[in-house]
Length: 410
Image 1 (cartoon, rainbow, N blue to C red):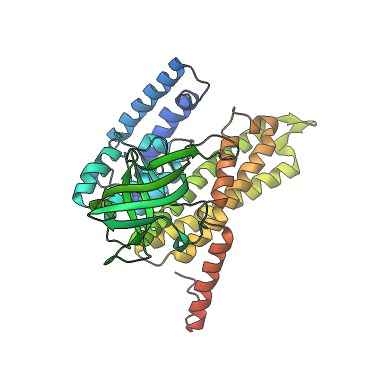
Image 2: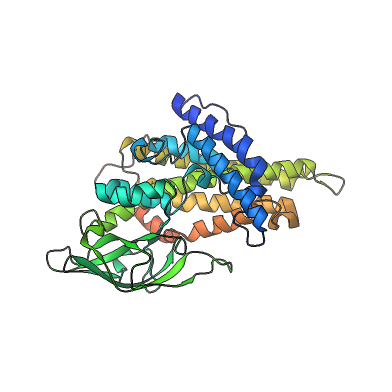
């Protein structure tokens, strides 16, 4: 992976990109298969141990480079990067699948960390955030429900009722990320009870070993096992102090998490698009077929050109959105735009690369098959495209209705 300095960005951003690329190129890419063994079900005990040892060694180098947990301030064990610095870093980091975890950024822990940082009390940060950052705990995020549309958070049915200083939680969730490994869950609930914002959402910390928390199963994703769990909360009792922020602030906290998360997901996608692009071009330049290399075929040249266009368009859209968020503007229209465009572009780029690689493209010998499933999943995550198209149209139309028009320089 080549990372050249960008003359139009801050010098610190270029330093972060170059430091990240150095670790990715020298430490991670040569060991991808060794590192992957720590998660493979068919790996031997020795292979898993070698993978874990390699991962820990790389994490030590990341910490020494000052890049560990870029989304958190130094006071809580992080690198303290700005939003824009972190976004640019993600593009480089995502070139290697699974690289983010070696830099202390892995969903849902990273999202939960940012929520704990912004909405948590000092006691909550000490009890949950610090161990999470140190890798001593795992967490899950429990919001989606099987009987409620994910695109409408107001439809959530899980309730939390205040009773004698405790929240009593009842509900049914699924696709609770990291459910099997989590030590605690952040659960989105509809608040009930006198003096509370009845009907509004509150996020509540629930240790997974609390009586009444029943993990039903890991929901299969694309026919494969996962730790996205279906969970029933049956009269689960936790202290009132486990609420994150003021009662009724859960929807705002979720939007804070999702908005930033979508930018980071898109920058991750762009990093993986570059990897798929490199693999496609390398294969096209080497593979001989029908009297010449694939790169000499006009159809393949079209693949290369279209993929380059997709990547650059997705990249510029996402960076613009990140800059708006960094500058304190209203990024809602742009967040919806990248949510629609980038995953679709990601899927197109990976699909072309797979076609150039043929059967090898769907094997485990390249990361392309995993990328394709990731791109397809991202296409349907965080709400259907129609929801975001409606938001874009309404925002644009409201500006024109107010006589402002659209500011094309902003």
